[in-house]
Image (cartoon, rainbow, N blue to C red; front, side, top):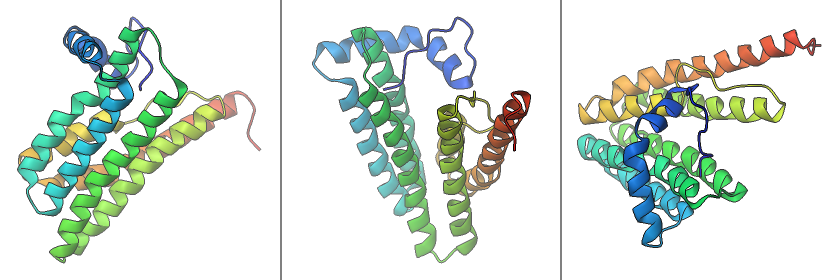
Length: 208
């Protein structure tokens, strides 16, 4: 479960979206809490939806895969909303949400990998690999940086931006466009975060 955002001025695009759609998410989250669903259950339902979307992508059904991903998108925000409305969060919930986010994105890329492999289109296969590497490294640089007490939230292509690119490209049946964008900008974002951490380390005289 994502930790609730308390800042009055959102610092990231993801934070801005949560604040902007709070009036929509809160009533839905309250209803889901009322019928007995838990935030962790919502997280796992979202993962199941992404696995279904990956299956569609592997079959070449890009439009329907994009529709499923678009429908599943709000689930990522609802688990955090439900936890906030319950007045409590859990460390396991936050851990589960982060892990599921990584798996969900990799499942989608895996679906595209299977499709392009079956078509023997090797350039898209390489792009899928590069996009997956960028996705993992964007997440890892933030995780490792914050473990070392650096602030690592900036970036050209964070998860929300990546999902917008994926959904739009699938809805227009142009997944190759998303792969180019993710392969290039995803890895540039990881490098951007490495540079950001280096600047903070230099400012603290913590370079060797």
